[in-house]
Amino acid sequence: MSHDLPVSTITDHTQLKQESPSQNVIVQLLKLYYKDGWVSGTGGGISIRKNGFVYMAPSGVHKECIDPEEIFVLDEEGKIVYDPSKRESKLPVRPVKLSACSPLFTLCYKHRNAGAVMHSHHMSTLLATLIFPEKEFKITHVEMIKGIRGHGYHSTLVVPIIDNVAEECDLKDSMEEAVLAYPNTYAVLVRRHGVYIWGKDWLECKTHSEVYHYLFDAAVKMKQLGFDPSTY
Ligand SMILES: CSC[C@@H](O)[C@@H](O)C(=O)COP(=O)(O)O
Ligand SMILES: [Zn+2]
Image (cartoon, rainbow, N blue to C red; front, top):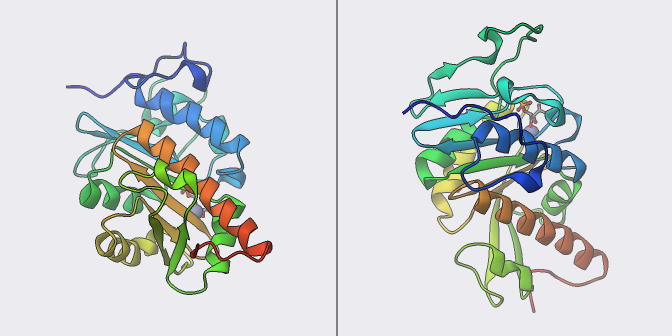
């Protein structure tokens, strides 16, 4: 099977369907995530794994301004099978390199069978790591917790927090440790940096992303109001 071909007729995230080409899904979700403040200043990103291929946005570019043809395609072993910098085009081609998040996305595919992984720098993700100075973010008795697979209103939702390092790719070992140690989590927070969130496919990753961001935001506000998010 060959990898998805981008379909340029998709111009808005509301046109996305489960089976839309992964390049189009990535491009449209990044526009949406930019508006939400999740991928500003070129930071953050998203990757999709489908039918034996892995799709990833390029590194260090404005994530809301990516063309579907600029999405890298890798095989399941991590070998690049489509390099956007080498494509043939009548228009000028800007040089792009693979996202620095690639090893982090890859470990979620390997250990959690994820179908999509996103990385956000939203302010609430950074603040959530400050209100929990230990190694876990915890929140309980909030209706939206039900939106994370395997969790209910009465659950205590736990998200591991790992320490930030100077280079994104050097987060690999500590993130791998956290992913293996917390089999019920679909997110790992990175202190003073952001979060990685995944799901079984891009739709579940989108749901989880919205729910986790809501819960990080809620926890920060609860703390400001004098409530402890981890108790009821
Ligand atoms: C504001 S730049 C932040 C980056 O260094 C990094 O944290 C990041 O999330 C982006 O990685 P990228 O290589 O652009 O996909
Ligand atoms: Zn980052």
